[in-house]
Image (tube, rainbow, N blue to C red; front, side, top):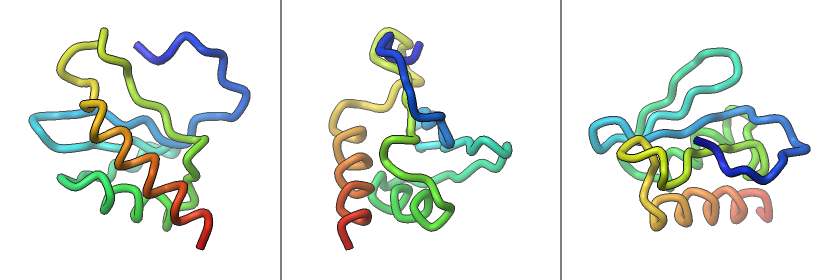
Length: 84
């Protein structure tokens, strides 16, 4: 379940937790798998994905939802990369 807030910016990457690993599925079907959310953010940024274009399921989705700390690290790194 994605946040109920309406998104005006299209989603280019959907990130879930699979067996303790983060899996980002890009709009073109490519999957990027990483253990570290900061490394995943770097790879997403290199693929042209920006912070506003990433969606993740919220806690109600269960185990597929990345933990809050993971989401914060991923979004913070993407925001940092945008500022460089």
